[in-house]
Length: 260
Image (cartoon, rainbow, N blue to C red; front, side, top):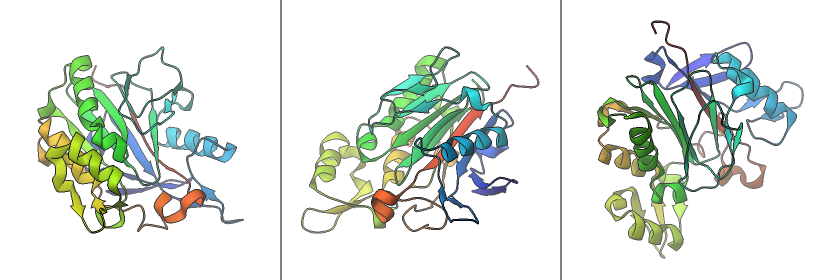
């Protein structure tokens, strides 16, 4: 991933997606003030977070007032965004649009966040995939929604899979194991059984396999290969920090095509 620095904060961009001039995006990094070491996250619950979101939008050339946020519920619902959409979408873990200057944001603390972009149809999707969203195949739902709504061809889609807790750090119990075996048996390779009916689950692999099954070329899927739990200086992690964890953000939006 590319590391970007502004006067306000540092953020990351996917290497492949940063090459498209009509797409702007960024992944927030954990920031601290010099004064009191307060964590500057992108959660909903404080004024500082609102300031950070606004600065982040401006940094990637998107209007803060148009920012679309979601009340994430760890499911697989996808919302198509247009000019009449409210700024806060209820019960939603995936969004997509083909309208420029409508930035969209998802929050994570160990779950996988992803961008799917079609440079031919000028459409972009954003999703949050925890284990529940993954076994409900939110990746496939997002691709199918973009196909149905914008006539996207999976062969034209480019994907960025962001930081998430890695397989080695993500111990899961019987509930997750049963869900994988019953709901996504084709992707059992992302689950490794350890002992006492426990295992380790690879969120990135499970979603990557779903995207490949949708017809997206593997060469057009970029993985960050960053573990949130192992990256205490740069990313929040609920597994590591429990109730003290903040949230990091993935934000994206379309830019007007200067040649249109």
